[in-house]
Length: 338
Ligand code: F6P
Image 1 (tube, protein in one colour):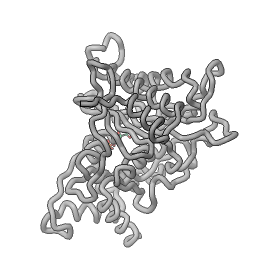
Image 2 (cartoon, helix red, strand yellow; image 1 turned 90 degrees about the vertical axis):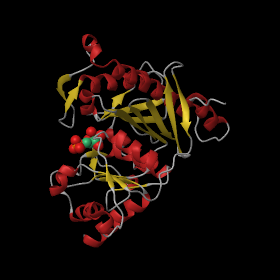
Image 3 (tube, rainbow, N blue to C red; image 1 turned 90 degrees about the horizontal axis):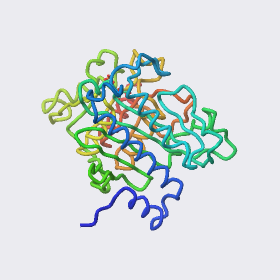
């Protein structure tokens, strides 16, 4: 059986399909290598206590959230791996207030890389899945990649996006705008091997993901939608729904990519002044690109996530994504009730 590694897939996307150029191929190879490094660090677990990778770092990120040592380490792995290849103009991370410049001693490329180095990091302590999310944009002609404004592009401008899930196996899910593919890390060979071609999210679902403890803060359309689901076979939807919440967006979205469903982290009365909880450029946009490429949809409730032109690098946003028919129902409720 032919074994398609990530390298081979990328070569074919470049040479045969002309979907990517050599620099973007290198960028994606380098990001995948960094994800392997993060996977190894996570896999060491508390046994690496002496090496110092587990536990609280004692610092806060730009969002005011406590950083774990693994947040910082994962960020450093991604920065270090991507600095010197000549494929990037700049990087921005959820963990850093300002964009990270490529040191002068290295050549600069045309791309901008944005990432959430360790999504769902509170799951680390309980040995549950975490992940890395990334998004790739072009640096606009003449733009200064040290400035946040160069990164503030709508999600529709993304040229690639992906995530790694560090679970029972390490997976890399990727889109270069040519559908969605999933690779599994073969630890013996040290390479990512194609295991799911052309991932598709079923349009209809019986599963939803939301943090129910926030119910009292939700907007009326979200309350109405979730009430419908909870009413099950006797309610307006006429069928029973199941609920799951891993509390790591990567893991929840990966479940939806695999068996369908809808994920909601909506704007609510607690986070309204911030615009929502999840980050537009490090979480929502890359996941929206992947979900749309898999036939799903991604909205704030009132607009397509990828259409938003960001006004700040660390902007937050309301996120409702997954199976198309479900996302459309939430949008309909927002239209009817606003
Ligand atoms: O943004 C970080 C994150 O951990 C997401 O990965 C996840 O979906 C969400 O926060 C979980 O939030 P909560 O703890 O409020 O359920």
